[in-house]
Image 1 (cartoon, rainbow, N blue to C red):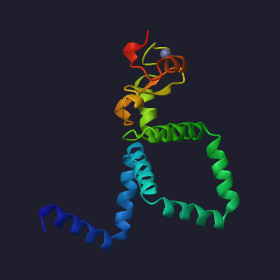
Image 2: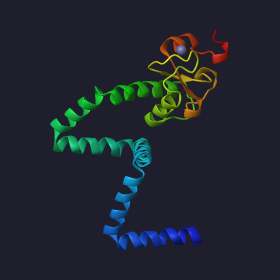
Image 3: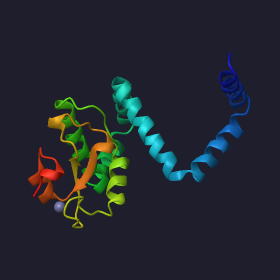
Image 4: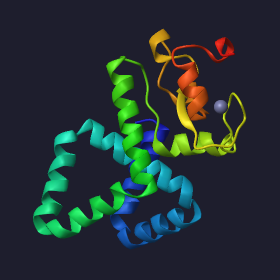
Amino acid sequence: MDKKELHAAKMREWRKNNPERNRENARRYRKRNGAKYLERHARQMREYRERHPERAALSVKRSYAKNPEMVEAKERRFRYSERGKLNSRLRRQRRRALEKQAEGSFTTVEWLHVKRQQNNQCAHCRIVADLTIDHILPLNRGGSNYISNIQGLCLSCNSRKQDRLETELC
Ligand SMILES: [Zn+2]
């Protein structure tokens, strides 16, 4: 066992022996690292659901069996929220990327971050608008679906760009 493993084993042992203090520490960590924690948690959950789609489906099914009205109301509320609309847009986008066999994926949080970094200004014409997802190197030309290949364009620039590079836009 090397040093790192030894440390991990010790930590595991400590957590087992101090469940309350572990919970309290975790709570304090979440409080201190709110946004970062939520982002990481959301990503871990998504990766878990992607790795175990059958288990994720089962868990939804179980809570539905327990309280169908609550689950339906929650889904409805989410679907019509800004976040829900954005999510379904991103889902469509992910499916498209998958069809084109592009490598990589990005999260809703990462996309929101890109928009914030651009101050909601179109990367091409600089107008402030409800930005749409653009692949800097288009998927059709072998671009990836990683966040590093994503920028925000206004709808008009995006529909003019399509499978071109930004430098080919006039
Ligand atoms: Zn534009």
